[in-house]
Image 1 (cartoon, rainbow, N blue to C red):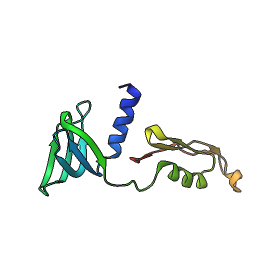
Image 2: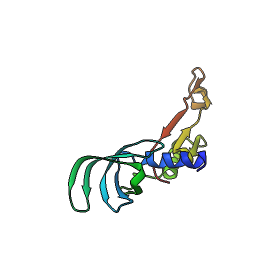
Image 3: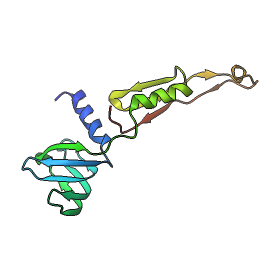
Image 4: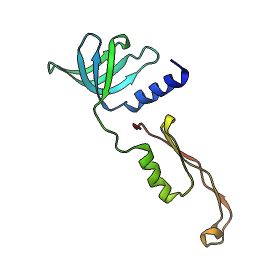
Length: 137
C-alpha cells in the first residue's frame, strides 16, 4: 500500500474515533461499540460499551488487528466537510480552502485596514485558522 493510501486509511480510521462502529472478525464474531483507539501498523482496535450478536455486553474489548475483517460506521457525521466550507465561505468570502484528503478547512490570512471597514485604525492581520474535523466525505 502506498504512503498516500496508508495516510488516507489512517485518516478514515481517525474519523471513526468516539463513534459507534460494527466490527466483524475473520472468524465471524461481530462486535458493536464505540471506537476509542487503534494502533498502527497492526490496527489493533479498542471498543467500549460493547455488544455482541448474542447480546453479550462488555465494558471494553481489544481486538487484534490480525482478525479484523471489517469496520463499519454506524453513526453519520454531523455535517460534511464541503457543506461546512460553503457556510464559512458566506462569512469569509474567497478566504476558505478545503483540503478533503486531510479533513481540514483553512480560513486564510488576509491583510485588512480599519479604513476599509469604514474606521480609522492601524492595519492588522487576521490569523490563519485550520479546522480539522473527523468527517466522512
